[in-house]
Length: 246
Image 1: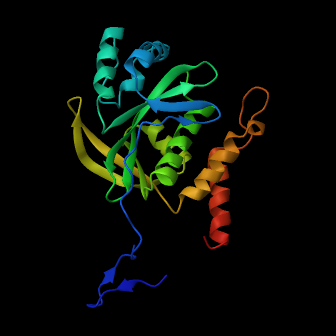
Image 2 (image 1 turned 60 degrees about the horizontal axis):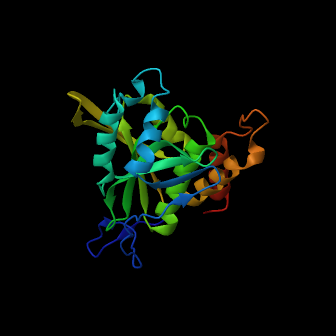
Image 3 (image 1 turned 90 degrees about the vertical axis):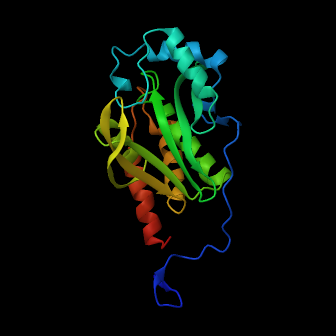
């Protein structure tokens, strides 16, 4: 693709003549096959979330988060009450449709509608949610909402550079690694280098199709084990798009 030049023969970015600001996220729930995502509601969700998080044997799931672990329900309820009042980050609860119970939370944050940039963060999955179809579907629902409903151009994922499970998850979900911001923030009295990942709108269709194929019931055996890996499906979709010149 030829590089665009301005009148001074300087290279400049692609023109976006039809661009208009994205839409701010609303309060509508997002429903899938296995889960529903809805805005945090303290009265309906706090007790269920605390119970789900209490299944963990220790506090290691909170090491790379800015809050927790919480020794008492009262402490967690206070935390969730504050989170529920915020519009950025905008915290959401993940509901397991099989049980009707809340099993984790995540947030849309650093919302820049003018430039079409938004981030998923504060991902706090309980043991009931980790390594399940719900975990993947929750991200797929958010990605669909961000790109198809709200019109964003870029969906970010950031994490502590030392948080290897989060970094692995970003790649599994199809995000592209962009680099590490050194000494980005101070958290819990310690330094954090931040690893950056993103999906842009032109990459989304391949991910959408791969997610849909992975989440199909026939992709799992009688024991619930996956037959095809999500990363492999994403790679094949991307290769097919590249061959087709998309």
